[in-house]
Structures are given as C-alpha cells and as structure tokens.
Length: 181
Figure (spheres, rainbow, N blue to C red):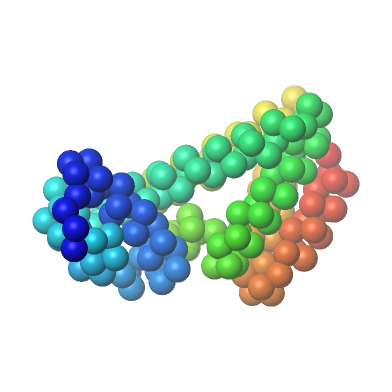
C-alpha cells in the first residue's frame, strides 16, 4: 500500500465507503473492508471519522451534496417552475439508473437504522425535507399538499424502479406529476 498525504486518507475512505455502503449495504460492510478498499490503515479511517457511525453520516452528507448539485444542474436549464419539477423526475431516474437501481441510498439507510433519533436518520430527514421544500417552492402558493403528492410519486417511482430494474416507473410518475401541476 502506498503512503497517503495528510488529508488524502479521508477522501479515499469516503470514496470507498460510498461505493461499498451503497453497493453492499451499510451494516454488511465493516471498517476493515472500507480501509482495505481505500488503501489506508484502520487507524487512518478512525483518525478521519472517529467511528463507523460518523463515516456513515459523512457518506450520506456527501451523497446529499452531490444530489443537490445534480438537481441544480438539471433544473437550471428550465425557467418554468413546472418544468423544473418535472426535471426532478428525470434527475431521479438518471441518478438511480446510473447506480444500477440499488434504490435511494437515503431510504436504504433508513431501513438499516430504525431508530428515529439516530444521526443517520437526521441526515435522511434533512435530505428528504430539502427535496420536499424545493418542490414546494416551485408550486403555486396555497397548494402545499401538491408537494406531498409529488414526493409520494417520486419515492414510489424510486422503490418501484428497484423492483422492476427499469426506468418505466419514473416515466409513469412524471406523466402523473404533469397532470397534478
């Protein structure tokens, strides 16, 4: 294993953890595996993150940051709020199909961390609340329930696409969303 410069180990660990946690599941992947995949020592992993729990939180926060960038990139091309909302369905489809339809990393994490007070669940709530807020901001004032309906369509399409291993649920959900807004 080559030596890493200070600061490199954390980035390597986070990259390896992100790939492994999403692909195999968080509880199925141990810190030994993450450290080996990252090419760093377990001491370097703990030196950067302190615990597996904090690594999981960092993984989800980084995924949330990347998702926000993707949403911003995809929706920026649309001036019309309705089109921005519909573009979110395209973003979800692109994001999940690129990852091999393993599902929403945030919902997957929720299923592995059932305690609502767990810091992992707080990151998930933040992510989903931010998405809901984005959708609500695009809609006409006075129609807050519509954002709830759109979230159900998005999340339902995400789950169904995993089962079907297909993008079709996103197409159906986007068509239905178009009739709602």
